[in-house]
Image (cartoon, rainbow, N blue to C red; front, side, top):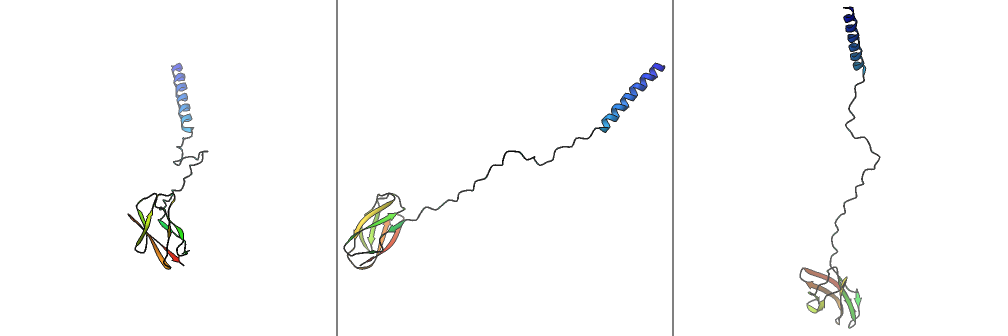
Length: 133
């Protein structure tokens, strides 16, 4: 019986030591909810490009010309078109067409004074003023 008592006390003491050892171990805590910073830099966000409006059609002519002399009239920012007529007041002077980046037409005006040039085409109506001396 003594042997059994010694064996029982040894086993009981070992169990108590084991339970005591388990109770003293620190409790592991879970990592914080936010991610830890990494060594790789965050991607940079490029600004979104703002769409630009296409340039408006423009009729270019010299401000002053001499009566009876040729000068160049340019129609820009309309692309290559063949269906644009150039008028001075109500008189058609000719077609403007096919040029990059501007279409050109050489004209002469004989009547002195302030004259209005008009480029007309489908979905196109552009003006320019010229003073004929």
